[in-house]
Length: 257
Ligand SMILES: NC(=O)C1=CN([C@@H]2O[C@H](COP(=O)(O)OP(=O)(O)OC[C@H]3O[C@@H](n4cnc5c(N)ncnc54)[C@H](O)[C@@H]3O)[C@@H](O)[C@H]2O)C=CC1
Ligand SMILES: O=C(O)C1=N[C@H](C(=O)O)C[C@H](O)C1
Image 1 (tube, rainbow, N blue to C red):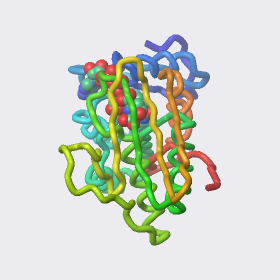
Image 2 (tube, protein in one colour):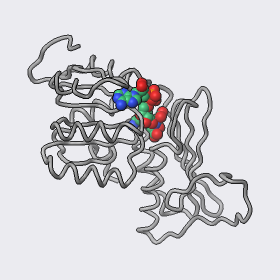
Image 3 (cartoon, rainbow, N blue to C red):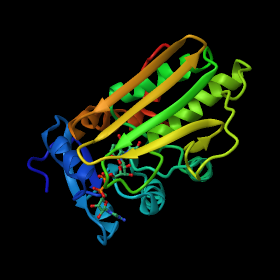
């Protein structure tokens, strides 16, 4: 699997290696300086491969049903984990933190989005949300996506809600009394989140903020999965130096917001 041996290189296993993101990550790791791809793990493959190949790091780009078990395995075997898979709700995050407490040398990054622009857009939206009466999120993705809303939209809405709560801002005004089920989208802590699935799209999000007489839109577009790879590599290069759980790639960036 490894094209060359380098004693100091990170030994990386990619889980979900045949998927849309996993296959990009395989190539990115193979081309990255200071990294060796030691395992490309697909559905049905044994996680023992990680042990047998001496993986020091893993990237999880699988499915929400598999990711928790994959990360638990990594942590128990001292393997640092960079996780892009969705489905990490607060219950799963709490259980992971408890698991990590017994493996204090291991780092795990749960990153709802690896694209720098998306991370910035979420941070800007969180900052801005406290200054507007109304706040809603629209996420737009390719039609093969299995979860809705996107992990990024959930995280963005959570950050916006926290910022509004801290500033004492109430729920967005809304006089709706009668609606078709779903017409106002899902709600994440009082923030309405709308999901579009459209052939031709990759991953897009628009945060709408409104007050009387004005609107601020904060939009990010990933037109290609290549946009996620610098974040995956940054995660791999940083995770061992950040033991414990980091939620969001912004935890590895100095955004100063
Ligand atoms: N954090 C980020 O920046 C991004 C995250 N994602 C998320 O990454 C995940 C994967 O997305 P895609 O690549 O589009 O999906 P995909 O469906 O193309 O790929 C998932 C792959 O995982 C495999 N798989 C399922 N269970 C497995 C297991 N137990 N072990 C190993 N492989 C397993 C599947 O066979 C499939 O090949 C999704 O949760 C998606 O939301 C996607 C894009 C960016
Ligand atoms: O499934 C995808 O494609 C994506 N998933 C992540 C999410 O749910 O937020 C990240 C990005 O939006 C692409």
